[in-house]
Length: 496
Picture: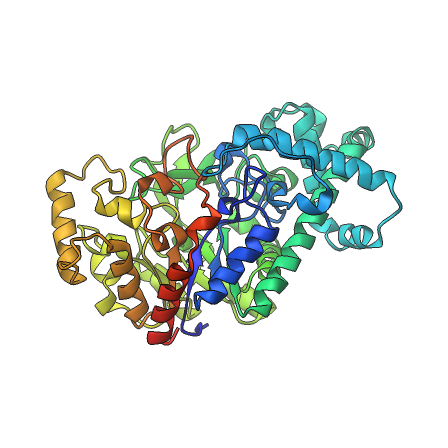
């Protein structure tokens, strides 16, 4: 489907400011929505909002449908004064135990009080995924946070008698996890209504793959390629590309099983994200056409083979069931005519990254604004890129193959293309923003770090690295009226 001409900002809620060590869905989120409105922006893009697991990554969640309790605003819960958390980054090692302790105390108070019809209705409405998720999280806590395929046999194999005993034994922990989801979705609904009143649409993110250590895989092992113990036999992901020199790995679906069921699991997932967001980015869209299959024994994703995915059949089922599909296809990396044919068949806009327009990337020419189609979402960079100012300062995307000569050639091309010689690159981030706003692309999205002109210290994620990612936060004072006015002027000038 075609999107109206617009522009917006990419910012994950964890990056919002506030005293509790991590951004949340409370007052700071509303202030950011006000900044968007004052800036003439009509889109707010977030990353996946699920409960984070391995590496604190929003792309490795314990559930494809649940919300992240760490995003729950604590002010409505009469939280105690927080310890002195860092202002500029999330210290997950400190934040997680403290905040989850506060939430558990809130749950105890909630369940000692009178019954809550809204909570009961929420649990009934969402029982299809909530019951498994709450039990999974309670079992995970009991087993010391180890991967579910290493739990005791009855829990691991979902033996009905064993699960009934576990539900009785872990009843209070299960109830607490249901309560956390109730709080998350209530606050998310309130924030979305606040944004809607300011004519701001929210764009979500749906990873094609789910984490092995998740309620999704534990509850539906027959839908994934696992061995008798529940461990993957093969994994799917991404071959080496400009984001990762060794590729990316994820558990792989049994697509034939899902097709035989009419793709019901996927339709439920699509339905859930469309209830949360106004439009959705489909991460690693090319994996729907064909995916990179790697033996689970391989340490990286470098050695694998291409295997056909569900192709257009999945999206045909989705369109029959759900109508128009407000999806954005992340079509970066190894893209074939077959992938583009599916995208065209369902009129899904693709993506373009301006940082990749000036080097040797095979897609580089299509990333240059003079080659844009209208049905496109154009970015200065993404959460996986360096900031634009950091890129300009020769930090680059982290590939060891990028020599100083290569970096200099990219910079000279960018300076000439953007006519940025007069500024010497001092405002390269605004040169990037201006070029995108002036383009014919229907949708422009700018990471907040690029709006603020921050360097590599504000980078959100560096793929294929462990530790130090997903931590950046901004301070309230950074969102100035001058910045809002400058963004608004561009949005008005270029009819966004």
